[in-house]
Image 1 (cartoon, rainbow, N blue to C red):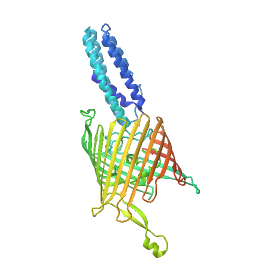
Image 2: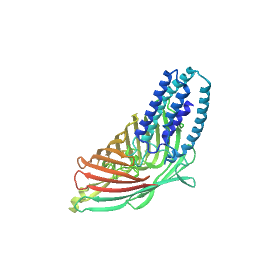
Image 3: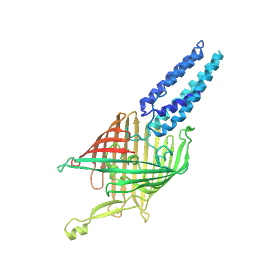
Image 4: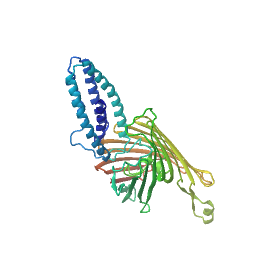
Length: 480
């Protein structure tokens, strides 16, 4: 019965909609209250065990959700059926336990049972801390950007998403309005991103995914992702770590995917990014790097690792053609391209505490002659403290062309605070230095409000150091 009680409390925690840090704290306080009364029971040898047991059970009952409370998360809703079965079993155990205690006056036996419960409460605290960490790392549209997210998001279990003919599907789109605060005050409206995602779980270890995405530069829909996801190893659900660095999950991806350099790739989709624009250093180095290749990942309790082998992205630069300029008397520019034949990269993330992750990234590209043409080096940090999330990156980008070598570097820091369960404020500042110009800064402030589940209204004001490219953005993003 004791084990069933503890499992029930932990599972009930998962059913609470919109859990925040204060919910976990409330549960821990409830556990402390139960423990205090358990210790009091041990001290009171003259107290009837049956009466104290009923009191403790009533206190444990306070941690259960109120009748009628349901979760919008389909996975948690499915778990509700299992919890109902546990409740029936618990009721039977309560009846048996009460009958036994009425038939005996062995206080020592009751004391031993209570001491065991006190010890198991310590284990329950550790499980609550783990649930808090898992909750904080899960993406939430109406809260803040997901930070300390795993390097890989496994395909959802069949039946937890909308399905059509056995294929899970979902998607999102956003509409953006921008106003440039300059002499020519320009206002524009348009479609930002639009994407339809498809997934199918072929077996317990193999799944396939594909995404069709809208390219607002060309005005066409094109393939955004197409990959095979092979799970090499996954810790069984509910199985706990025997060592602090126990492996949770390993996988291999093959196909087209967002390349996991740094941490910004987690928010390439507009539905995940809380500001309308991307950080300046990301936009001017690797951008939304999407490529073809293979990827291997490993996730553990306090670390994650990913490496990949892909084609490598093309980079171009316009340089002055001095010969043509002298011949024509006018400035003539020539476009110099870098297109690696192969690129290899890796990222290692360390999580010394549940609220902190530190990572480092490296990517290199070679041309067909075996010469290294592209080097990307990055370092990142992420913190989650109650309703406040902070993250930042430093990126160095070098292009070793035969002519027109290029060395760029920059950084950004961003903070997001959840004001209520459905609103947030965020700010970001970054600076970038290219081969052609000195350090150049850009700041942004933004607000967001969830109108409904999956629908969010956002505002951003982008402030440039030169004051000429300042813009305001309004974005409406919807997921389905």
